[in-house]
Amino acid sequence: MPTLDKLARKGVILNSSYTQPTCSPSRGAIMTGYYPYHMGMQKGIVGRYQPKNLPLDKETMAEALKKEGYATHFIGKWHLGFCHWNHTPTYRGFDSFYGFYSGAQDYYTHTSYGGHDFRFNKSVHYPGEDKYSTTLFGRRAAEIVSEHNSSKPLFMFVSFQGVHTPLQVPLKFSNRFKHIKNKSRMLYSGMIAAVDDAVDRMLKALRAHKFMENLVIVFTSDNGGASYVAGSNWPLRGSKATLWEGGTRVPTFVYSKTLLQKHGYVHDGLVHSTDWMPTLVGLAGGQTSPFLDGKNQWLAFSKGWLSPRTEFVYNIDELKRSAAIRVGDYKLIVGSPGRYSNWYPVRTKPSCNTRGAKGGYIFEEKQLEKARKAEMKANQADKAWWFSSPVKYIGGVARVAYQAARGNRAFRLINDWYQNYGCDRLDEAIEKEDPKLLKAKVQLFNIREDPYEKHDIAKRRPVILKKMMRKLKAFKTTLVPSYNPPASKLANPKNFDGIWSPGWC
Image (cartoon, rainbow, N blue to C red; front, side, top):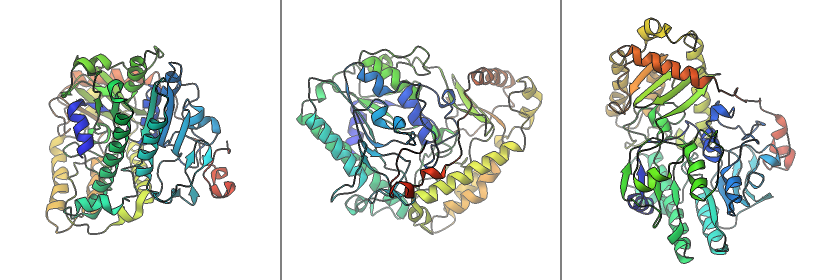
């Protein structure tokens, strides 16, 4: 993608940038600087009918920047709760909001599950002639820049809907990729091109109004690609909604024309989504809580210094009984990493069916629900490992940990399925092979030597395993119980004239 690629090459590409496996927890971490398991958000996304939100006692990035005199604007997908007005962007530090509250919707009609979901500040908004959301968000960002009083610093949080399901994009973008025979992948590529086009529109506005000389752009994602739809994290293992590298290690870069003393390079230091809060607020001259999980990474990015981060928590979910941590080069996973635990190639062959593309966000949400149930079932089968005694694992669970030699045959079968058919049958391969990959309970990887997570060394490195289990146990002592309230019928848009709206909790 010409615009994004150019910015990345001229800035700093962060090669070890991590986030959470799904949207809402990642957004909460970016916005506050806290791990989701320290906010009760570790269970997963905020459902449309859930009276669940980003905790009000946690300061947001926008609130911190407003203290430094910044104008603050949120554009795009919120997905951090909306059952009460106090949970929505203009009550969480943003001067304006242009976008939608939930996690996914139709890109053109801006509806989901029978309700309209698009706001301009607090007012219900019906876009005009060009209704494609990615285009609308890019246009709104350019509008804010053109109308901004340059005597005041500006912060924009632009959260594009693309490339989330449903796979929808104007023909002028998808036609660029007619050479891709797989329809879902063709649409997906077109959606990325639409994001690139929207970023280009923003950049033109920034240049026209003389912002480029004192500006920082951060580009990142809230989870890895959804391999069960059209995304690919190849050669990394796993998909969105998993604890594998493919679900959590995301494309990220920082660009600035003047503020990076070193640029045009790749930084390999560890970065986590919690780091953006202290990094950006610190760069603006502000102060953040000393209790944040995030680290100020600006000196590392701007000068090429070592990252101040040597460890992080992928997640700790006491309800699923799954967790993963990284300490130095080592990664520990306990419990099920997720349903999509293989290596998934880029989809290049024509689709045998297009249920993923046609089913849209409904299809994806059904897949995620199936994944959740599969993980719960796998973990409930053996609860003994859940932090009773780290020493126990040396001779106990570690002895029967899922071994790479045993798993290699199942791993290879994905490729066999893909290569031996004239059309794309990856969905069927996932259905057949992934259940075999849910059995592992304790796994240990050296990510520096084995970035693709092919060799579980838990049995061969008992001393390191013991240290990692103790570290995980220490992390768990600060866990805030997961807040996962049941769905409420009061949220039904029928109660609000067909609008997804606050006011039901």
